[in-house]
Amino acid sequence: MLLKWHAVVLFSLISLSIGWYIKEPKEPKQAWGYVPVRANASMFWWLYYADSPTQNFTELPLIMWLQGGPGASGCGYGNFEEIGPLDSDLKPRRTTWLQTASVLFVDNPVGTGYSYVNDTLAYATDLCMVTSDMMTVLREFFNSRAEFQTIPFYIFSESYGGKMAAGIALELHKSIQAGKIKCNFLGVALGDSWISPLDSVLAWGPYLYTTSFLDDKGLKEVTASAKKILDAMNKREFKLATLLWSKAEDIIEQNSNGVNFYNILTPDTTSRASLSSTASETASFLKLFQRHVQYQNKDKLSDLMNGPIRKKLKIIPDHVKWGGQAQDVFANMAEDFMKHVIDIVDELLEANVNVTVYNGQLDLIVSTIGQEAWIRKLKWSKLKQFSEQNWKPLYTSPESTETAAFHKSYDNLDFFWILKAGHMVPADQGDMALKMVRMITHQNH
Image (cartoon, rainbow, N blue to C red; front, top):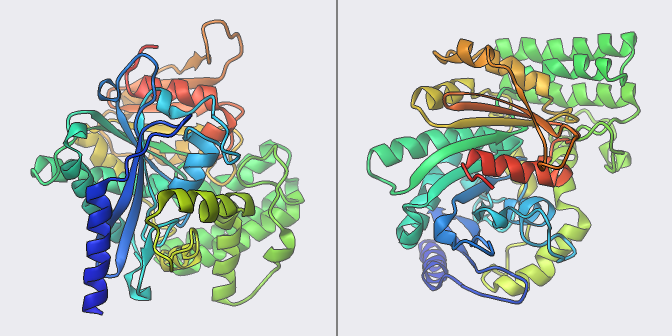
């Protein structure tokens, strides 16, 4: 086993030192590699240098993108379905974030995407382990790429990635203060984020009722199921709360004729046959995984990542299949899944770290009213002043007359309400997402 670990370390360090730089037609400069974070656990990263026609990458910020799940791949889904230079058909994306920043995708936690474990005991089981692993990655990244140490660095996230981003941002801030990591960290953006699972769950009924996806009877049933989750959380029975969460979603699907949890106005393409009611704990976790992670490993993207992209990257170990360990990633985080991190956001704000919250209007799983609910619970000393601000309408361009979003800001907290977007804001409203990125990173163009 020791020899195997040394082999993994050697292989990973060789890939890091080489950097695997390429420059292909229609593609920006890239680099990728593995970082061994613990024994039997290695994480994959993929960097795209900013591709602006007027500015060098050294004049633009660096953004790290964290996907949700846990178990969904940023190097796959975030890259090819949301913000990378190419879509899943390998056609140029008009609204890629590379126009305005370099982007670092990391498959996180270990076992996600191309990241992998060689021992089932090496999976992360809580936010603390996830954060520790990411510090190892970031320390190695900034040490080996000194050109990025002074470039403004931001963490952007989506869904469960936001919960992880909050913890990672706080630990990164502390590591920089302690001189352990050298980088110019300027803020974290939490997109449709699982910051307070309970507040999200309690908002399901009211949100669906006001959008006519539930009648009085349905609202009563969904509210009752949410109360069971609340009771479990109050008793600190976190794994039970996760299982009850699954049952609450079943009740929503039954009462709403299968509303799409990620965009209420888009048909749900999930195969309901594969989500039949089950009783065992294992089966319930499998159902949750299928509903919330597997759809991001859909066949087309999986074929791309395990075919042409794997061939291009050249460093993926033979035993690693993209997305092959995702189900185990999700299951190992089940105990931690329903825990909130409102206190971590409070610490970030009090430490003067810039925090942005953004949310899609049509998202159910993490509805905007649920986000507003946990923000009201912040103990941040400037919350009252933030709350008293008037929000301002935003437009995608000076010529546009249609409101694309609303924005409120005070000191180091920003909130963006993104209209006509679901859970995946950049996929649904690419132009507005790009404008938001430029506002957050202080680029006036």
